[in-house]
Length: 559
Image (cartoon, rainbow, N blue to C red; front, side):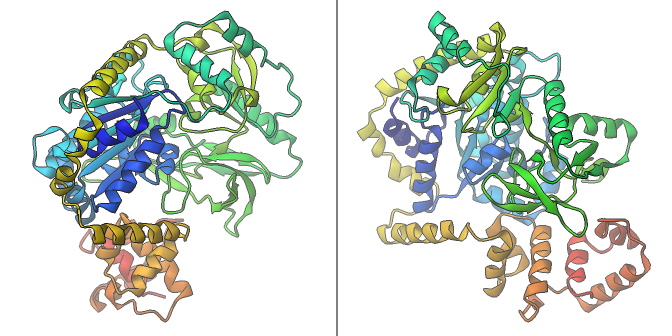
């Protein structure tokens, strides 16, 4: 299917699975549709299954957007607690279109959970609460992480109830745009088909280099963590300077702490040196980095927090972050606090999903999971940017269920292509815009186009600068949070930073009662705080009588 036809189907309001091989233009089509929706004033949620993929779409992870976190199941009690949060409730009420990119990495149980969340908030038993859903991705990528006993059919989201019930229309893109060298594209298509020619094997083997001379500048991909750790530690030793060590702080139920240690990508003990190549292992959209952002340690703050210069030339301070397992009330049962970094001269192929690399050194000699070779090779633009360390048979194999599904997707897409006429589809565009609460007024569309251009320019500003503009406009805390798509707590933190540099602005809208300020001031003077723990001790001091939000706001007005 051509991109124009897929876009026409999207505009008709149908639920869609947008797929095709690497470089077929899936992201381009999505961006075209997103632009169209914004021009017509239709609320769209832009999400992806991973942080690094979400940045490509200027969105957020589906886990964060839907409030499911790492959960495979959400209860009515938990959803009721989310409904109490105005920003979350308003977000769900408003959304008309939901996009989930890199859908292949979303577990079937999690897609069912997203479906349940939307049905709950929309009070609508239609699939996904009647919201148009667009899935985009390629199931030849590695399957979602699941339990050891789970087979592919237990994990792939096209096996979920939500997928089946949503009756998605398959749009299988067939044009190629990414790979400039047809040789790599041919290799990837052969792997997808399951028919590997001797020519392909010979081409790949011609890229094997056992003793590369200049791989320091290249990203190295390995199948096993053991090899990744060996390379990273060896490279760190080669840096002739002193190191700093960061040890994780843990708290809570010991058994749950062990679960966190196994699931969290941050290391218990992290050793860094200036110049070390690192990767962020946590999403922080407010600051600007995501899980998978690469860079180098350029120095440290006065508090010994690592300063990271990314490959894009941006600088971020890697402050300690906390991973937690919470009960349904939000109480932390176990926590793991650590600098969200790990060494990254080498990374696993699993972690490379969603990346596009200019060049890479890839070891496929120990491939143990079908699809690893395809994922690794499809990170590159052409064959000339590839250096292999080895290759085995498994690296060139694909999951049998993914292959069967892909063939079926191609058939369904061809049927859809023949059945739906592009001009006839156009007749339904206006109806969907009206149904979604959008506008067909040409003057308003022109205004929206100009507004979106201004907004895109504004995105180059820091997150604090954007919040500052809303403060100057006189918006309330809740209004700013809604417009930013952030929590009120995050906005309060922004205002605290802004207040340091702009002390003369009017902050009265954010001020709680004098009574609350006096109480918080008293508690603040009497409590001996642990490092980075301020809100909870004050909250506990008053036995929960003063909300976290009011405590946070009060601290803005306490010297």
